[in-house]
Each structure stands twice: as structure tokens, then as C-alpha cells.
Amino acid sequence: MNAVTDAIHLQPDVLARLGYSEDDIRGWSAGPPRAGMGWERDREAFTGFWAVSARLLAKLPAKAQRSPAEQTAAQALLDAARARREAFLAAHVGGVYDLLTDRRTRFVRLEELAAAAAALLPGLVPDAATLAAENARTQSAKDGHEIDQGILFAHILADRDCGLHLCHTMLLPHPKSFALLDAFARTGAADLGNVFVEREGRTAIANLRNLKYLNAEDESTVEGQEIAVDLCTLDDVSEIAVMRGARFETGKYAGKRVYCTGINLTHLYHGKVSYLWYLNRELGWINKVFRGVAYPDRSPDEILGETREKLWVSAVDAFAIGGGCQYLLVMDVNVAASNAYLTLPARKEGIVPGAANLRLPRFVGDRVARQAVMMERRIDCDSPEGRMLCDHIVAPDEMDATVAKIADAITRSGVVSASSNRKAFRVAHEPLDAFRRYMAVYAREQAYCHFSPALIRNLEQFWNAQNRKVV
Image 1: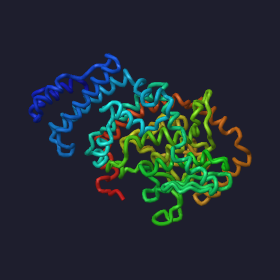
Image 2: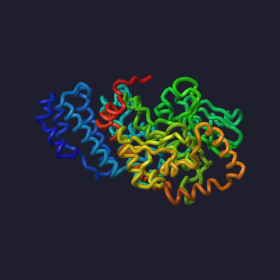
Image 3: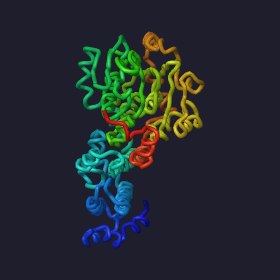
Image 4: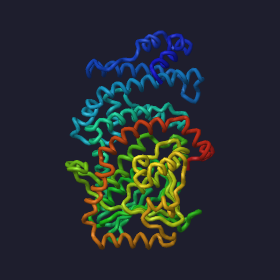
């Protein structure tokens, strides 16, 4: 919403009819600040404006109880504050990031960075109390305060120095990984809840097992997946890594495996998926599969940098839906059952499908990629387009043997040049800086999609989400 529209919606007479006091109206009528007065004066002016916006918003009923006029006013307040966040960060993002990271001498992960930003500049992003209140609501009842996190990270990623430093941060081992690495080295197994990691010979295998939700992705999976990728990558005994769905013991798929059904749409509808979940996933474990795990004292950039990396093999049993299809785009070898299929139902979900828009056209071309993302095109693995994504198509009952055979063939022939070839492909097709630029756009766009009314409508129309319960 632009400033003219804000002014129309929040003229003094409108605020008075909504029950605001003269002090409230006077505070708002002072108008939004402009950047350019220097760090200290800008900081004081903008945090003051955000405080006024928040105070006026807090005097309105919760979103679910607002009248149309009250909701119009609430949205105008939110939009005006967001416009000022854009302006402040356009002028000061480098200084903000330097303060949060001690001039990029410390690696600060996403959640800690957002929390520190809330303390440094109150109102720039939601604080813990605001997030807790939002998290108690369903998605449609939220005001979307996490959009402000999206604005912050979009600006950080858009700045080359800040963005590359943040990418480096998220490629480092997860803080919990080192505590588990020694035990995994000794036992060859690690139970991470919804992921189980095991070593078979010279292969490390990450078994996805959010079985209650057909290996859907949600808040309970992203940390375990990142740690699993760390363990597989950093393990000195194994030479390659495999990702596949665990075997079901009961239910419709008893005795079978499935790969991944993408984001948990029921959790999404009920407000159980945070905005930072998207960034943790993309900047974290998925990027680690593609680029390797970074060293703190060496750049992960392809030109002069270095990471610890391995070849990754994926095994698609039954289907790879949404996020599961995105996994295939960062793997080195994809094996699929002949009856398996791939979809990217982003239009029906109302979100951006991770980095698929960046990566999928490299495999199937721009037109097929657009059809998959925007027109729900299904890609059967055993089809010309499917074979552009999948290297081996085999009968469903031959999947286990084929995966084992491929792993054996790769390790027998040696993997000494694997990281060199992976790096050469990346620098040609998706160097780290290109990924950073994409993620700068993704950070903002996904934030707005995540809180869009269209997302709620889509989930109700295509998923019957209002009648599904969180198990």
C-alpha cells in the first residue's frame, strides 16, 4: 500500500471514528520519517514511528474480531510501518548487519540474527512476545508480523557482502551436529527423530521418516534434516551419501517407502509453520547438499573457496511432491521407481517452491518448468521430461538393489574428483553469488505469500484444510 492510500485510510477523522484518542491521532499525524539524517537520528526517528504504529495496532481487536473498517486501518498501519522498514534498511542494512555480527567477524544464524535485530532496533522485526502471540493463532488470524523478518533478510541478502556472509553462516555445521558426530563415527547410526541416519559400508544414508505425514516437511523436520546432512557429509568413514524415505511398518504403505510430500499443508493452514522455516531449509540443509558443509575460516565460494562435500544419491519411491521434487534438483544422482512421479503444486499452495524457479529450468527447460510451477504439470519419472531429472528408472521392486549397486559402483571407482566436478558444475550454472541474489528475492516474496489470503483460499479449496486436524 502506498503512502497516499495510507493517508486516505488513516486521516484524523477516520482514526477518531475508530475510537483513537487525541494523543494517538497527534502521534500518528506527525507522519513517517525519512532516511538520510545519519545513523543515530534515523534510528531514533524510525524506531519511534514503529512504536507509534505498534501502539495503534494494539488498540484494535485481534484480526479475527475486527470490523471491515478496523481491518482496513490495521492493514494501513502494517503497510506504512513496512514501507518505513524498507526505507530504513535501504539506507542502513550494512550498518545493521555489521552491528549484529561484529563487522562480520561472528557467524550468527537466522533465528539469533532476527532476535538480535529486534533488540537492537525495536520495531524493525517482531520480538519474542509478538511472535508468541502470532504463533498461537491460525494462519488466517495472523497479522503477518513475520513479513518484517522477510524484509530484513531480503535486504541482507541483496547486499553482496552481507548476503555472502549470511550464506556462509548457514553452510556451517549446525550447532548440534558436532555433539553427535563422534557417536555416529563409532556406531554408524544416529536417531534424529524424523530422520534416521545410518552407515552401510562406505555409504551414509539419511532416511526420512516423518511417517505420520507421509514424509511431509514441517517444523519438526528441518533441524533433523540439516543435522543429518552434516553427519553424512562430515563422516570420515563413508564416501557418498544417500537420501530416501524410510520404510513404513503399518498403514496403506506398510512395507513400502515414499520419498516426500512437500510442506505439511495442514500445519501451514493452522499456523504451525514459521516464516524462518523456509529460509532455514533453503539456506541450510538443501544448500549444504548442493554446495557442501563450509569451514569457518574458508569462503564457500567456488572461485577461491572450499567446502567439505560428497556425492549425493536420492531414491524416489512412489512420488516426490513439492519440496521432495526440489530435493532432486541438488542431488548428483537420482534413482526413481518406474511408477513414481514428480509435482510442484506451488500454485495450489500459494507459495514459491523454494529454489525450483532457479534450478528446474536447467533440467527441463523454461517452458516445462513454468508449466510445473504455475500450471500443476505432473512429470512422470518414466517420461522424457522425467528422465531429464532422474538418471535411473527401475521397477519398484528393484529400487533397493539399484541404489546399493550405484553406491558400490561409485565408491569402487573412487570419488577423488567428485568435489572438483561438482564445483565446476556449480560455477557454470549456479555460483554462490547467483544463489544469494535469488534468495534476496525469495526472502521477501515468500514472506508475503506465506501470509496471503490467497494461500488460505487455496488450502481450503484444494486441500480441505479447514476440516483436517493437526495430529
